[in-house]
Length: 200
Image (cartoon, rainbow, N blue to C red; front, top):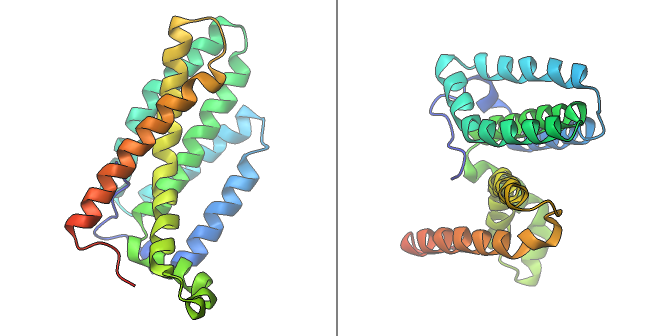
């Protein structure tokens, strides 16, 4: 479910987690408004080059993590082709692949403990008030890890709805998505309890 860290992250593993998270945020902000499939199409080879710079195994792992997303992208592309908006669909698919690819690269080259350390430093003033900053840091880190997964599940639910109805999915997928998220959260909670919980 969660992107696994590489055993040998290479040069990317030497970059501080805070810098990588800021770069991820910046890349997301820059890519979100882009509507040109040509520009987005040029971004993907750049993302692939990032993985390739860490070795063949990293590239294979990155492609494997995107494989489930490809099925959804094909469905989205076909749907937009049918409704005569293939250009808009291509932009969405390329943007989704690029953003998820960059996010996975960051999580693959950053240990969970490093991400938690960054958040804990930001929350350190709250420790004087007796706040369990470690629990908050873990929550933030899990959100970063889970976001690509929830996006995929939301898209899958949307496409499943469109396959059965001409009406827009909208709010109708909210409850199923919440139930899926709760189920994932319950599994993570069980795993944490099995390891002794979150210590201050």
